[in-house]
Length: 219
Image (cartoon, rainbow, N blue to C red; front, side, top):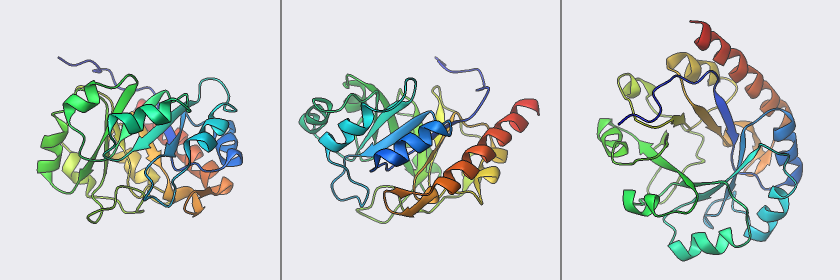
């Protein structure tokens, strides 16, 4: 059964890897729909749950807080949720469909894409899917690399589709022209260094997404 059959009227934007309040507030003021916090300790963008919670509580209304996890135990997720009022959980590891379904929050399942076989695996998940570039072994996202978007020409899913992986101000229009996306997830493409965002890059990227969304809608 298809639960999300109608095309989105606009492309939503998430800025991930937030580590500073000023970046979260700037992104919010520029019109993003969500900001993401990385709770994977091996990531250079890792943030402690208590620090993330302090930022989340200062977000304006209607800006979602997303928590990113990689192969977490249920206890690890629950421990973060005891501090952080997350609206969405984004799972970037090898989490099973059953694990995703068991969560108390809405779930986005990230799928690392290198071939058509990876897209077949995405079909197993009854939730929104984030298609990301496949990173080297032991690395999960945030590499600044993209993948071959032509693999997605005939790919459909019963839930919203999102794109990540090396998105930046130089290629964001190409991503939008490729197909209609429910949302784009950007991290390294708007950074000065891991976890430190660049206001000018965020502003330019958001303006280009909004303009590109209008073009897709009118086409």
